Image (cartoon, rainbow, N blue to C red; front, side):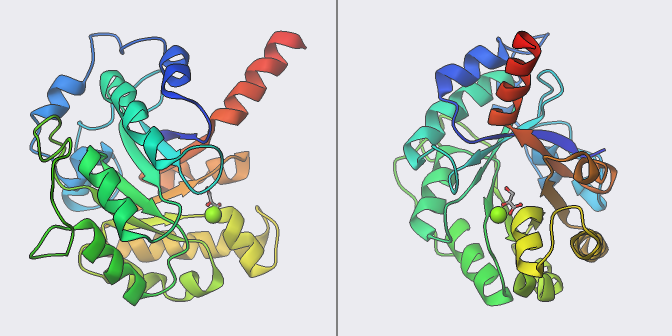
Length: 265
Ligand code: 3PY
Ligand code: MG
């Protein structure tokens, strides 16, 4: 079973803090994370995948079954300025944080990595060239071209090691080039967007073309030993969790709707 994430699309830091209800039993994992010598596996805490991506136990606590947060900067109500307050709450709760960027813009990627997130999820990646540009955006020289400056990571406020780069495959073109994208040096894995992928393939989520496409991306990424993640939000997609390292189970909105239905039905 992949590490389970909550996809946050509108909650403020205050709301998230209240929803989580305090540090996990035994205290915050933040202290451990700050001192960690982290690998990709450490950051996802994954129990899937090959090599050292499988065995880590840091950078993803267990807060009521949640191990990580996806902060959706592409859809919903969150902006770049919301990341640091939410990250502080996540750090206190021992949860890893993966913003899903609004675009491929290098300046925004630099800002969230500077802040100390465990990785970034980048939407709509369709070629190895686009993926290589993202590697330049996220890595410091000599591997890339990211600048350094007075920020949480550089100032030693937090020390999470190298952020993971997870391009999203969520179009027919991305699907066609998934193996090339996954093979790019500096790409740590692929995150699948099943809803955009369904539209791009001309079908509905859960239908055969998209389920076959998802299985092929999972197999492709697995063969590289890199990480594979996906947003689910439906039982048939959630059923694929055992094949994934990172499973964005559903959104804060869904959690609230279910809670409302429970309380008022
Ligand atoms: C998609 O399914 O397209 C996504 O981006 C998931 O958030
Ligand atoms: Mg999408």
